[in-house]
Image (cartoon, rainbow, N blue to C red; front, side):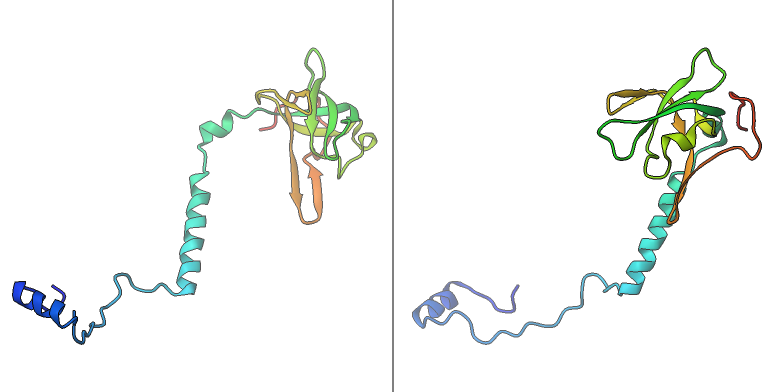
Length: 163
């Protein structure tokens, strides 16, 4: 109840006097949920982000499915109408060089790449980028200072498997 009773007699009285209710006092009730302080919110968010990192963990079996080989860039060209892409031909000691489209134009000129050895993921499903079929992925590391292609410390034969 709301702290008062309304029956037929009292209801008519309220209507005759045009007085619905007298003074009503509402008790202060405690909150349904405790207030979470801002530092606690940040701490919980950090824990959730940390948990997400663990959700992206793969097994060794999944990692072993990735084939990474050493390849030698034999040709490199700008991709028309693209500010980021270069089209590379990479020798992996197969019947023909693979065509790979890489988003490295901001960091490397085509001339810098000729005869450079790079690490290539060779068992990715081919994908079209700017209408060009890319048959692999060049591995690189990027930070605030720029992008660096992953290369072997010493020259290796094209097609050498990275383990």
